[in-house]
Image (cartoon, rainbow, N blue to C red; front, top):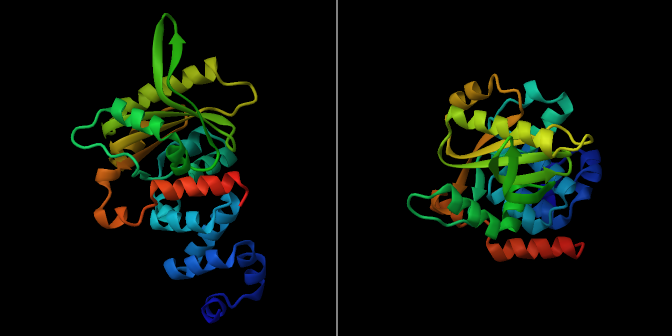
Length: 260
């Protein structure tokens, strides 16, 4: 209680902001997050997303603030989306995405990552964030007389648009952006409803060079973001021990379903 008073001398802030989360949330924040502004970000996210205290701890341990709020984003959203839609889309992106529930060793194929993600789709949705709804994998698009298949297709409830996700088990290459631009054009013409916002593409790559990605997206006319992803083997051992276990995630999902 003394530390709470020392850290937050502004009475109105304590009453209006801290009162929106539980005492257990506050203890976790004081114990794990030293910077006050960073705490404010986690408080806002916890309130917005309805995080339990356990989920708040998981998000802090996974360094969500650094991956979502601080990480430089490789996108062309400002030039391809309205200001409001661009800001919302940027807020949904992380870099890197942590798929620590996927353990694949050696030279991994994209199909193996995709299959592992489908098998753990609940975990994938938690890492992608609030608002993502899974539509399908290897989603078929027929253009002319040829069929094309999207790796993963989602719909975002807050952005009100389709999210086309392409997986690359290698470093990002400029041709990846052109391929995804084609898919987005097809989705907008063949699937998108008149009430939907423009579809957004997300390239998930093993690694990327930020400057290469920015140049590749510069003259692309569809909104695309490029992020790295990390599987369990890619995550440092010290961080692996801090990440949430599958049973913890399942418990959180149960809490949400029961309205806790």
